[in-house]
Image 1 (cartoon, chains in turn green, orange):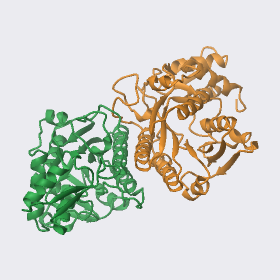
Image 2 (cartoon, rainbow over the protein chains, first blue to last red):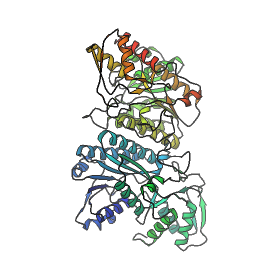
Image 3 (cartoon, helix red, strand yellow):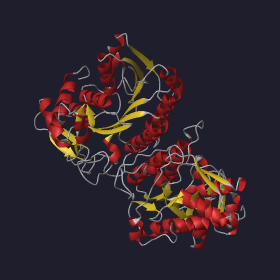
Image 4 (tube, rainbow over the protein chains, first blue to last red):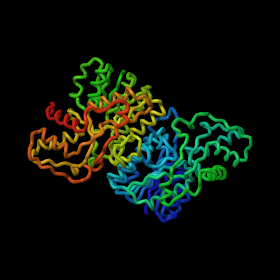
Amino acid sequence: MRVLVTGGAGCIGSELCEELLARGSSVTIFDNFSSGTREHVSGLLEHPACRLVKADVLDRAALDAVMGEVDMVFHLAANPDVRYIPGQPTDKDLQLNTLATHTVLESMRLHGVKKLAFTSTSAVYGLAPKLPISEHDFFPQPISLYGATKLACEALISAFSHLFGMQCWIFRLANIVGPKQRRYGKTVISDLIAKLRQDPRRLLMLGDGRQEKSYLTARDCVEGMLFAVERSREQLTVLNLGGDDTITITRIAEMIVEAMGLRGVEFEYTGTEGGWPGDVPRFVLDVTAINRLGWRARYNSEESVALAIRGILEGPDG
Amino acid sequence: MRVLVTGGAGCIGSELCEELLARGSSVTIFDNFSSGTREHVSGLLEHPACRLVKADVLDRAALDAVMGEVDMVFHLAANPDVRYIPGQPTDKDLQLNTLATHTVLESMRLHGVKKLAFTSTSAVYGLAPKLPISEHDFFPQPISLYGATKLACEALISAFSHLFGMQCWIFRLANIVGPKQRRYGKTVISDLIAKLRQDPRRLLMLGDGRQEKSYLTARDCVEGMLFAVERSREQLTVLNLGGDDTITITRIAEMIVEAMGLRGVEFEYTGTEGGWPGDVPRFVLDVTAINRLGWRARYNSEESVALAIRGILEGPDG
């Protein structure tokens, strides 16, 4: 299979490209390096079935130039900054998520590419009326621009799938962590490590420390997606992708402190319920659907976080 | 109250402006006349509290110029063509619905306008897993670009409401009918009347004739919206707006034939399940929520259709 991976130089994208190449696919990495990095993919580019296109996913001509030569798209490119910073434009997510996804869909349609896998987010749900959250049980009300614009992507994919006969997979991801540092859009783990390196005596955390979320390694994420793409024959498959457990921010901080060999660190909290406006303070994913398909995350949330901490502390940027 | 009505020269918009003026509000009609008409509002413009701004809702400067002087926005401007015509661009709905709604939200945010009512559509639901459809019971999967991009608007409104403290009302409308002809985006009623005027012996209908939908007069729609805006105190109110019954296309055709005094008209069908790709063949709205708030449509679907038929046949364009 000839596969186009947008955002292919990102944390998840580069793991995905590696795995696709290992499974015998040819891979076009499409990335503008705004948050992905060359380091993530430099090793892959030595593979004869791998090529790199440095371009923006909003650049229709650049997409069109490669779309005629692929059978499937994994569309991962997105704004990595989940958090809206007051003062910033409010249309960044709209551009980088929603309009970019339309551009990909339209290029696919015009070139007859009929298969799309898309990385959505559990942020589409907003404040869930019940936990754990299953895929189809309630109408979502996102509370962040990131979640809203990813939901808009899902809606466009749903319509394109129906109107133009595309087979599509939508994955609503847990928090994805891994050893790779991102240039922007950092994870809570890299944030807390950076803070402790600056001041190893006290650690100020956003929120009340009780925010509780589900974490998944980038490697597990990639394997779950590929598993579902191979197994699910539906026209439109929508799956939560994560484990069924959670971990609190305070527990993550404790694990980091221990891994860094620190003692007596004073934990402080900004005190709000969520870490920032638009942050969903607590989510637990119902992953029964992907489990029934036959896949289960190798690592639970605590193990995933532990691996990510170790990866960052011991990694090239560590 | 000083109210801005985008799409204020449309079928619903002009009825809304009339009612707002009657209730003592001052009204800014904002319309580019792409589908709304001057005829719809010419009578209103004689009212001292009414003014007209001819501009496009994607024109931020034009919005900004009036936003500082209003307390609330009714955002009705949208692409009136629910149906996607093959060969047309696939981003028309994205522009006229989603990007336009972001533009309105952003202008409101920057000018501190904190109240928004929005006309969404029952097309956001797509093919419902169960009927009647209530507002919160399942995750929507729109099958049309119109439905998808209106869902995207809802998502943006949900996020803006949460992030920036706006009070918002989202109305998922049944099929709205009324005596006013639209320049584009005609209703099934005006379509069938036009066909019968061309050939009164046979009538070709899109679909299998069994498509079954809920209809509401523009007047009932306006009264329902104003009722909910006055009564609901939630930060974000989402309401189906319609009656709880339906009517089939074949029944509508029979009513039109009778109203036109025709006999022996041969009904023919294209035979597909929906009228066109992206058409939801059957929907029944659960309107318990707005009924509980204290409002009920004055006319059921059959009565609404009957009124619309009479209005078109006897109206100025009839």
